[in-house]
Image 1 (cartoon, rainbow, N blue to C red):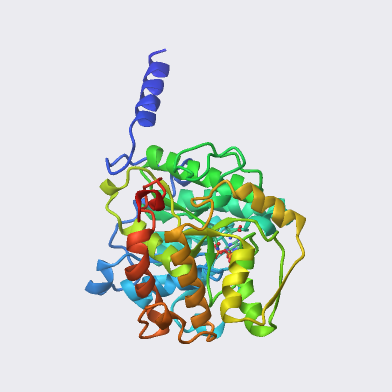
Image 2: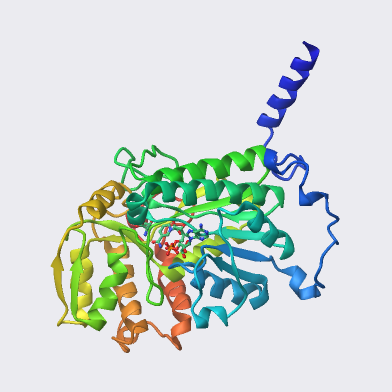
Length: 406
Ligand SMILES: NC(=O)c1ccc[n+]([C@@H]2O[C@H](COP(=O)([O-])OP(=O)(O)OC[C@H]3O[C@@H](n4cnc5c(N)ncnc54)[C@H](O)[C@@H]3O)[C@@H](O)[C@H]2O)c1
Ligand SMILES: C[C@@H](O)[C@H](N)C(=O)O
């Protein structure tokens, strides 16, 4: 009996104490006994220069998708080229391979992932591998494996090796019963896609590992991301990238969503900037582990009209994909702006101009909007300084900025 009492007391003490920073050396069960934490911290196979040791050593999983290469570029600028390792199960293009360290990593291979973390002395992990909403619905067993089993591997390795872990969530983590306009950080989440379900699972598991094992888990719910240089990986918001490419290549765009389907979106540079900011935030500044981020919401029809202002010959037709449409409708609950209000509209026109500028379609566009862009690489700076500081929601704010007269 006393033994049972002691065990239950110990368990309840552990469960009550957020392990964060208090030195509790418990790690997920499968790591006990073989934890590389037992290896002396100076048992490195590589010599480390002083400046290198000042920076985090970063691993990005699923890094060859729409977002990973841009994230690596941003992080390498900040922390040095060799401190940021891109990884994926696909073969990188030449320009990616030669731009910095790349390594094969399948997140379903636990031992291989652990070896990479140990051998490269990784301290920060950005977990980008996933099957997105539309491809996930087309292959539920694979989505379950990659998005759930893969996440479990990453969580255990991150907890075992004291990593700071970023896992992106999504607007797809909400569902038809979530409150809207604005959708708060904490609310009902009952998504009806395997993608959404796996992301809610990731949010909850990350928070659980934070309180149970002290894992430094950080998470942002991204809207649909718009990029010019990288292709989307099979989600419902892909149309908002494809339209720019089709406008340039063929002058014809067939949209797979209904013209009035409003979804939240964000320009890639702002998404990556927010990601870095939340990773660099001091722990005491974080009141939660998972936050919404938002920029603007628009419909395919509104986007088509805006692009047509610059590419008047663009012809847009609608051939609705029932699966994507159904997923999109589930996501529309996450709407910060029910129509394009002033602040959102300004951001929307700017993003369209910037993407067209990047695609070499509207070289004078940004200048006409009063934005000075010395080079294509300074787009983030321009967007951030001229627009977002005033108009984007702060990370932990759940109010609509346009309601505050911004
Ligand atoms: N792009 C968006 O609009 C958006 C919006 C919300 C959230 N997110 C999230 O951000 C992250 C990155 O998104 P993305 O758009 O770059 O995704 P993507 O689909 O373009 O790329 C995902 C990458 O994961 C890789 N991958 C698949 N299985 C793997 C495995 N077993 N091991 C290792 N890698 C594997 C793929 O090869 C691919 O390169 C994802 O977690 C996604 O859910 C993206
Ligand atoms: C929104 C995001 O999660 C992704 N682009 C999707 O549509 O699935």
